[in-house]
Amino acid sequence: MSAGSLQSFFAMGGYAAYVWPAYGVFFIVLLIDWLAPQLRRRRLLRELRERMARQDARKERANRNSATAT
Image (cartoon, rainbow, N blue to C red; front, side, top):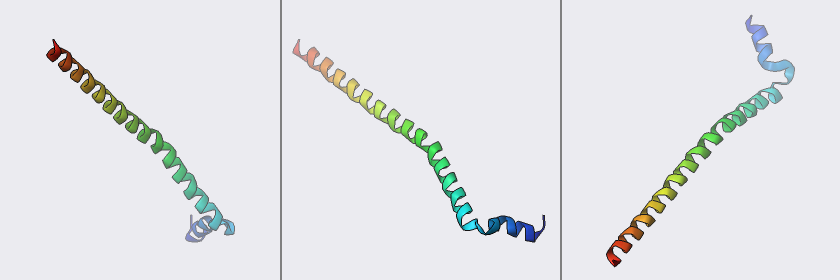
């Protein structure tokens, strides 16, 4: 592949201003589509851990209060 043909490939027949941004947008969307479920999973797991910790603390307080009341 010569330098001239490589240059014409990147020029995309005069449509490079439209083609390369389209590729860029595609890869950005692909990256977001790959990252979003992972970030959502982390957030949900963190929220579940916090909820379970609050429930455990509530149960512990209830146990202490019932033990001191008797």
